[in-house]
Length: 189
Image 1 (cartoon, helix red, strand yellow):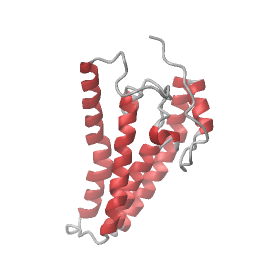
Image 2 (cartoon, rainbow, N blue to C red; image 1 turned 45 degrees about the vertical axis):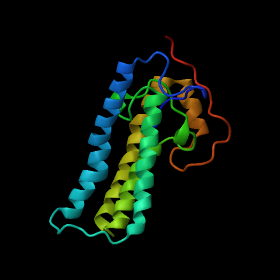
Image 3 (tube, rainbow, N blue to C red; image 1 turned 90 degrees about the vertical axis):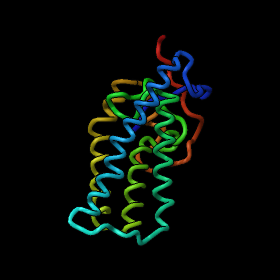
Image 4 (spheres, rainbow, N blue to C red; image 1 turned 90 degrees about the horizontal axis):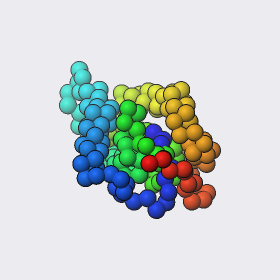
């Protein structure tokens, strides 16, 4: 998911955010994480592995770092959405500003890539063609959602700031940032 750019000196909690608002943001991010990535990255893969089959046995323990890297990337992205953008990864509670820090400087959709890393790691861990097929369906769905809905919505919502970000940062294949993160206009207070 892509969102807002911020001034490079923006830190953790925004100056106008109260402790109650910050705690509410934490709760919203935890709930989103349990529901969306929890269902798509844990519950559904487990169901696919066990539905009509015996409990699977891990066969490729070297896949654990891939799963851990995907989970760490997701949490880094969610942190940036909350700390920089004041929102969650959910489109219904999106950040208030374009987030172009951390992994968002390298690629526009790191949360989707994180989800794919987790599921691909699980497919490897259990040597599961079912989970590999599920990852392929996820990748296609993510691409269709991003190109058909998300990018258009973000362009309307954030205008020139998002269009500049979109020109500077690739959609799927990470690359080293060419220059410091572009500065976005700050919302009126």
